[in-house]
Structure formats: structure tokens, C-alpha cells
Image (cartoon, rainbow, N blue to C red; front, side):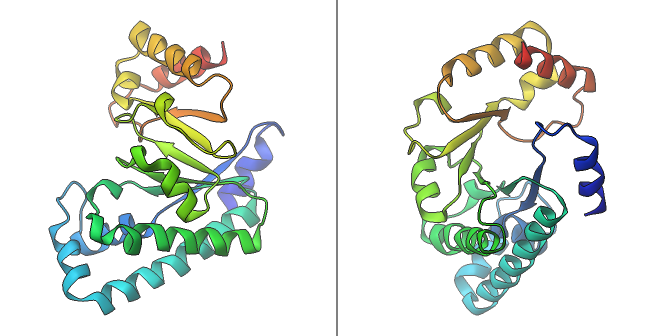
Length: 219
């Protein structure tokens, strides 16, 4: 929280500071599986065979994540984002219970403390149902991964979209990256839109490419 206060104090007033947290299903997968990049067989079996344990774990994560995001807003974060990075692994039968309902509860708790703070949800690999996700959770914006055609999505007018340049293009840099970024910005012109990657920055990405991309977007 002190870091957030320090960064907010150092930023120009017109630059928004976005806080974030992992969403309950994604955090639970790391807790139960012990690592990322799995097929999540263990946690899916747990959710099906031991519902009381899974639901209690979800309740704890909803409460802890709500407190964490509220504290970030108290410290100066002006927008908050929930990363459901493993949304794509959730079976349809678990989708409401594991993703939609917990996210909606977090949004309600945070909005109770900070009614006007925008909240972005990021259900990775579920971009095709972004409108339904936004309606069910109450988020103000939806992050879209690079596997989805963000310009083709039909969203309520009040819902912003965030995304979705491929992290691989950022790692590549150069003209191919700049062209893709320009195409994305042009496609989203006139819509409520936050430029971003389709997921996180890949570890080997040269920092110079990030600076190059920011300069290209600003131009």
C-alpha cells in the first residue's frame, strides 16, 4: 500500500493508477495445484467432489480479495482490475459458481466502500462472452485476450473494453508491433477502450520494446 501511495504521488494528475488482484478461481488454482500451466484436474475434481471445501475456500478468497482491493483504493489506486487468468479452464458447469458469483460479490463489496471506482474484469480466453460476463458481475470494463476479435464484440455502451495486443508482438517489437497496435487503435476508435496487451508481458521482452509501443500509441 505504501508503494501505491508513493507511485500515485509521483504520477501526473491525469495519469490513472490501476490496482489489481488475482480473481478467486485463478488464485485457488495456484493454491490447490501448486503451480501454473496445468490442466487444473486437481481443483476441478475438488470442486465437484468436495463442494463444501471448495465453496469455503472461495468465500475466504472473496473476502480477502475484497479487503485487498479496498485497501488499494484507500491508498490511491483509481481503477481496479481482477485477473481471472485461468478462466479458460473452468468447466461450464462450474462457471457461475467459480467465476461469476465470486466476482460479483467482490465488485459489490468494493463498490460499497468506493462507489465510483471503475472495476475491470479479465476472464482470459472467455472474451466471446464478455457482455454476459459484464452483466453478471457488475464490472465497468472487460479485459480481452489476444485470441478474441475485440473489435467484433458487441457490448453495452457503458462497458469499456481493454486489450488486446499479443504479448508475442511486444516481444518482437519493430514495425510488426507498431502496425498491429495502430490497427487495433483504429478498430476501436469511438468506443470506450483502454489499450493494453492480451495478457502479461513475456519475461524475455526487452524493456525498450515497451517504450517503443507506448510512443507508438501516443503518436
